[in-house]
Length: 253
Ligand code: ADP
Ligand code: MG
Image (spheres, rainbow, N blue to C red):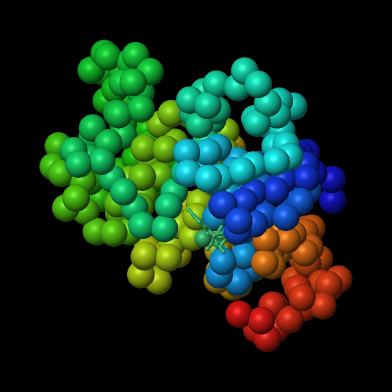
């Protein structure tokens, strides 16, 4: 299968002080597909994910070498507007972090920052993205109540709606279902499968079955190195590397 590349990573190395978390990673990630970054704990999955929107930059003592190209531009090159870059990506973290405000204001937050003030327009936007994240029916009668009163699963969907409301091209998820119960996880997974028609989705997961259910493309990391990457079917059915085989069989955890 031919893929159109969305994120092109070249010789990316990242160190936290003396600890090298990524070692010379090179990979092309496909557009409008789901890529799963898999591998045992501490192998650099989160670091790789956060390098895509330069969220790792602010960490003390961090050193980044190499390039990450997004639509042809090296995001680590000179003259890159990090705020603009981050606007292209929505990030879901392990635990949902809704802003301490109402459900409505959480979704309207980004659009307001971008200058949308008209009440009617904001109402439309809030409804649209709450529908997009499949939360609308559950919350439409209590939009002005605090987001903190939602269940964890609902909060994660709200964070998804908030991320989508700034019209990103890419959705990054760092173990986005790890704090959710099986039902809520399933709903988020289903949502991702729908959203990939419009967005490039990259998720980190340590749940192999989740990667098998969702991924079109797989990146397997081990101790900071990219060991193997390719179409999910191929990597799961015929892993080329001993380490990948071991991980899929559950020998390496
Ligand atoms: P994963 O997401 O696969 O568990 P991480 O990318 O979080 O892996 O971490 C990779 C390595 O970098 C680990 O050895 C971890 O201890 C180290 N690391 C991650 N974040 C930091 C940090 N802020 N400061 C120092 N070391 C870090
Ligand atoms: Mg992690």
